[in-house]
Structures are given as C-alpha cells and as structure tokens.
Image (cartoon, rainbow, N blue to C red; front, side, top):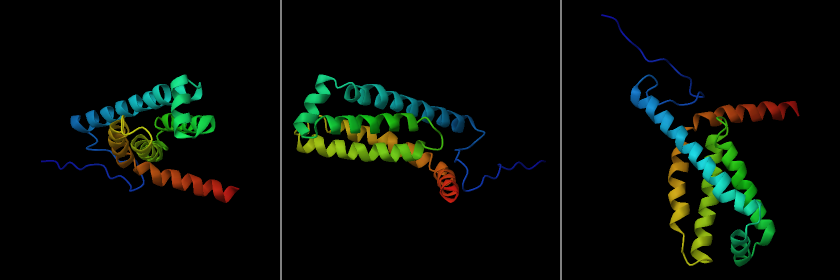
Length: 153
C-alpha cells in the first residue's frame, strides 16, 4: 500500500479548497466566474453611468446632495474595484472596499430614497464577503510587497 499526502502550502500562499478534487476545482472556477460577473457589473452597470454623467446618475447624486464630484468619485472607486477584482493580489482588498461602498449605498438607499432599492447593496455584499474571505491568502503577499516598496522609498 502507498500513502498519499496532500501538498503542504505556506500560510501566506493563496488558499485553495481541496486542490486536486473535482469539487475544489469547480469551486475555484465558480468563484472566479462570480468575480468576473461582479467586475462586469461594477465596471459597466454601476461605474459607467456615473462616469459618463448619465442623467439618472446625475439626478440621483443631486438628490443625495453630492453633485458631480461625488458621482465621479463613487464611479471611479467602483471602476477601480471592478478592475482590482480581476487582479489576484488585489481581489480580497477590492472585495472589502466594494463591500464598504455597498454599506454606504445601503444607508443612502434607506435615508435618501426611502429604501426603494435597499436590498440590492445587501445582495451584492454576500458574494463580495465570500470573495474577500476566500482570497484572503493574497493579503499577506500584498502586505509584503507594500512593505518592500516602503523600504525602497
């Protein structure tokens, strides 16, 4: 009889669920697909109307009282988050940052828009938290890279 062992990974490497199994592979592919879909949503459906000053976005931000500066800022943050969701070392941080934006969107929906679409940010937080948690292994690599860059500066 031969003994099989799972490969040992360091604590700082990216986590992988059951690396060699069908279920682990399927889970990684499914999570990546969710990341791509969220990146498309944030980049196209959410950020783009703000960045091109679509009348619906302008009207919403005027109602909030943030005007065009707030609209362009939120649009830029959403676009940056969408791109970062696709970059392995940034995906966990991006998911946390987009979750924070969604908490703000939820509060705005409740306070300014009478909760009309308050469920949308809450629904979006669920896969973002899953991504942040699952991809958290990259945070150590990112921190190490930032520390190295800080020493060089």
